[in-house]
Length: 402
Image (tube, one colour):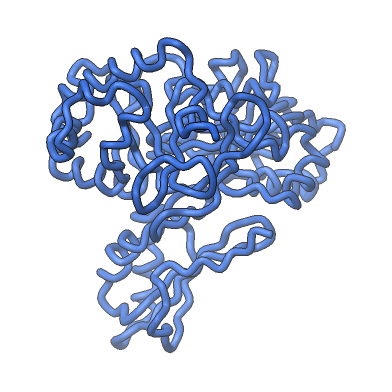
């Protein structure tokens, strides 16, 4: 049987040297030095991917705790790092954008889908606070394409732009691409002006039924996978062929109990980036996956098969029960609540069920709605109910992905 090392990375001859250089640089930073000390390790002991297993996996919650203790970047950013933008993902978690072209490395996924310099790309990821919009903007520019920064919402204007500008490519949620197709039809726009030929979608599942619907309008629809912290981690070259792991990242699929890399079965996706300015070493994404058996000599992930812990992804962004408790539970007059994540067609829906106390339930509902919009950054239907089941989870996910 192949060793875990050959399963999770197709190495080149200089990989271990680059890894050792990143570890040595990271050891000069307070956060990683503390992790080494806590594990009883020295940097020179981490000379290969297999050696990294001795280092406990770092969670997103631990990164947020480090940032609270040592703001803004938790002692993880090199003093000479060239930071061009700073983003805030839900949590909150602050993420630096390092200087250079395509710093999150998504361009390879766009090229695999046929994106080229002649394209005009409609980018429908948010440009506000979180990094997704800029991630794909940088990637599209790296392949030489023009970008129409659509962001989230304004589907009427975006549908008209598809017609007026001869948009040829799309990046965004698959569900939002479906919504744009529907809006294009509802506006009575001329199908002859629909030139959109290729799309790279991510941040939510792409079931076969939805891909089939999209492909009737967009011939090439391919899935990619990554996170706000790490950038690109996998991309399709053909529908359903698994997610090819890019060459410039180390990925391990790790047993949930031991943290050991596995070659078969599910585990957490654990990432090490070869990036010394802001090193992420043995970072746990919280996503579950498995290796695709067979194929060529490049490792491929089977997509995201679930989540570790309690966080769920809604409309491409993570929502954690602790966030919901902090934002909603603090409102006077909320006796009990839960948030229900569902699916309407191929679109996520979010509903907040609230048991109110006191004499002014309408005011309570208005406050909760505003706090969810402002602090959690979700639109949400608020429903007043008489009771919440005693065993109900704060986040109840009832979506069916079949």
